[in-house]
Image (cartoon, rainbow, N blue to C red):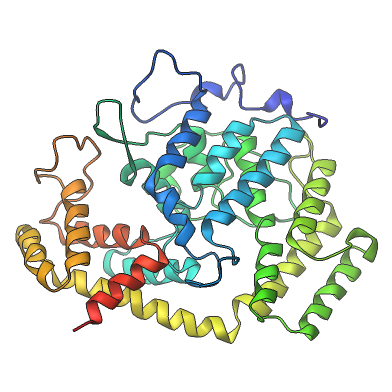
Length: 406
């Protein structure tokens, strides 16, 4: 099914970009009887890592919700995977590559969604004069943080392919009137300094970049209706946007499945390798208007403002407590002493440092990259940021409650 008009530029063997796309930073173990492709191996490695599992308790828009039917980060990445698979399959691109990028693209998201990201961004800018953005943090997690157990029981970093790593860090960026094309250059991904700076290296990465945007617009509206964030007058405004930009014939109902379907159809109809990945003018206008509607009526809603203050209190309290532990090479003994007061926090953060610090004797089966140096205070601050950014909403709240408990 599909017109397969992108099949000649798919990231498959024989494509001029193939060899670079499957490059890994280090070799990974091989099985003589493995039946998987390089990108399917990456998909499995992401699926099995703990950062992926934690996405089920990370905010998409609404913080630490007790409603099981509100979208979490793991549902979002699965929507992105579904949308990108459908588009890639129809156009003749590599669906194994889109799937791997899609489920890995948000592994570096902080607890409490974009608000948690902003809190860590302010902290690391003040302390280290660095930028924190979840796309690059996702790359950091798949490169240096996440590990899997190899056949001998050793812990190894994921060591994903270049194309998957590239799609993860390049997934951000707005969908504008200009068509999206993959870039030509093979670059060091750590030279990328801000979100959306460059296009992905593959057409498949470009598909995920677009799927990320069209997967959340309708879903956020559905959740806002469920949580009584939107009232009837705002829904009438939304219907008028549909009528004014698309015409009433385009939509039977405004919900996520209808929105995603129409976006996918429009993109597939108007895209080609020569023209790039592009929506029609009316759908570009519609995307912009729905985004504006969501920002004004959902993301800036006063009920979310209260949660933002709570998120800031939770994360900053954890940061302050961890900073108090620092004393150069004497930091780990101090952390161990604090297990009497903060058993969960001290034990988990102590284990984090033991796993990732140079010069600390860890379990002999830990063969992962060592990324911190305790005598360096800046390195310790980076460890705090990494540790907190890996937390779920629920775990951050649990640690916060331990800290304030007497």
